Image 1 (cartoon, helix red, strand yellow):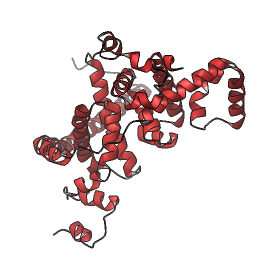
Image 2 (cartoon, one colour):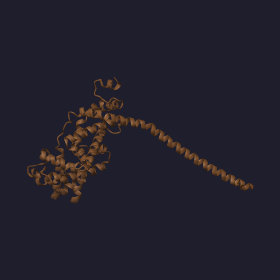
Image 3 (cartoon, chains in turn green, blue):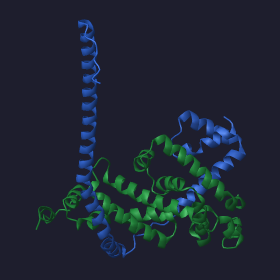
Image 4 (tube, one colour):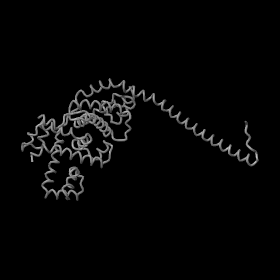
Length: 203
Length: 137
């Protein structure tokens, strides 16, 4: 039994730092213990960005492999969770950019094909939360988000869904607070612009 | 404050990052401008939609899939690691070779310069002593 395994048997939950050190010393079995502490939050972020369960599961596997590969180089210059997020967001970002180069069904085409119908939203009772909960509303939201640039989608996810501060987003994306502010401004404006045609009739 | 300026402040207003003066100006403007108020409500509503997203758990087979994927990727990781290790002596050798070449270049230049200086000094000495250059042919 190696030194780190003995340490873990003391009955106390090992800290992230202890697990990272153990991994870097060669005990690769601790990887699952360490990352599973954050897996739900990370998966929700990936899913929020990718907007498709099966695709998110595949991207999440890529994220885990990347984390596994990069963890030996983690030097603790940033918080572990910030680092985890950065790797996850960057991996998803790469996936989204690659995907953008591939042809996809456009929102307009989907509406024309009657895959999405704005009719339901024209009801005076259809408030914003009903739109989000309804499957059609969710489909619209997915398509609209899919039309946003990946960097806009990422700041919206981190700010609106995860609730991170400007500083935390700047740390995750390795950019300035000013960049976060301006990216968020443009992302929100784009989201509103693309959603308004479906919401106007509710007013 | 004009409508355009007010709309540009929406993002910061939502995050509570506007100064108290700007907050007052924006609120005051929206009291009298129906269009901006409507835009603000649409802005808020569009973002509210994102908040309604339910939280989900990571798939139950996440780790079994991961271990399978890792097993498949391990040879590639190992190869990468080995290539990195193999590249270290090669990089050291390249650095040493470049350093050696640079030193040799400097030494050659210094020697050439010294030779030229010697020849010039010899010519000067010969001139002073009245010795004429004799052709060997």
